Image (cartoon, rainbow, N blue to C red; front, side, top):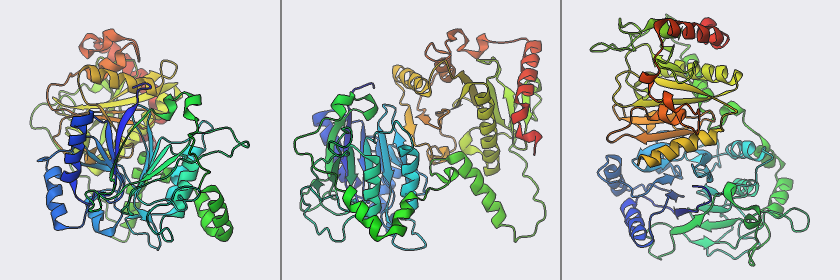
Length: 543
């Protein structure tokens, strides 16, 4: 989108009044044109029986949100049941739960940081609460970069403590309002816009500085906006519309312009004083979780979780468990390893549940496929033990490509295919950046009038697509994921066409695999070469 501004809507506590909200959004869009996304802070779900009935209409697909909607998690124990995973997922078509905490970066470059729920006041921590460790784990990887200037948007349900200092006062009692950890988060992340809910009122604070005048270089200002509940009887503002050019695309001089009504930073002085009073609490802000525990570090976390689960069952009899027989095809299948149709000379590595093979008509000499040994149609159909081994293969191939100066691009087309084929294509690092690859996918999708969405990195495909749902999916070397729900005619060679295009590998004549066939001898030679080169990374030889 370049430096084109995005049009964003932000909403306060919806509390289950979905139709009221979406009817209002539809009316606004009819009058003012389309918005790019809707962000919801505070409690999205209500606790009444009517909420459940109304939600079922959206969950079942009988009703659909008129705009891509991103919501925070539960802010009360009553609504935890509506969120099937703490790691974020699609709740209904066009409605995505962002997750417990993390950073969502849109295709335009817009960066949204978020923390769901309320600050924990007790141990064990309730499911609708966050801790100082959560805040530290969100802050650390961002501010550790020397290029970090701030985020575009920060979404929290709770207000930050002290936000009203040096500014205009809200119309609520501030004695018990706000969380110190949210103030720390806002002070560190320097959001251009910070939105919150839960207090049942609208409060738009004067913009405040993120630098000390004469002591530090000028930085952009931050704006804090609290929103009221949807359809509140006092008719306080619950929906806020604005346009924003992502920080990364802004002219630096334009970005740091200071409005006339700008105030001092409300957090710096108070945070310093609170650290003197409560050194233990201050230390918790600095206590960073190990990288593998970061909420968005999916691969390692999944594997660790599955290992822990097996250990927890250690008090049961230790009789070896017989592996289940993998699903069998009902007819001939070119990719089931036990099938007579499979071209075994292309096989590079065989695990317990998955195998790796050279791609037929490969885009590059080391373009490979990752496939389940049993007959599974797509990633969302896979059994847990198959997913675990597939993740190990993905990690091994990434390391293999990285050692050769290649980026790893994975894609899956679950459409007009009967056996899962995860295509894994290397792209030389000096050919193009990950952003270039992502843009190539987005541009070609737009040209073909396809909606290719970026989904949160921690999101499991099984949370977005039910088994049997046709889809196209891309995973980039940064962990960024793109997803398209296929509704009708989909170009079968789309993934190859994008990667073969001038913008990426620049080998357009190889877009169709049927035009890239090798002789049997050439295929055997290529397979042997990749097998030998992959050997140091092949975990099946080490287990």
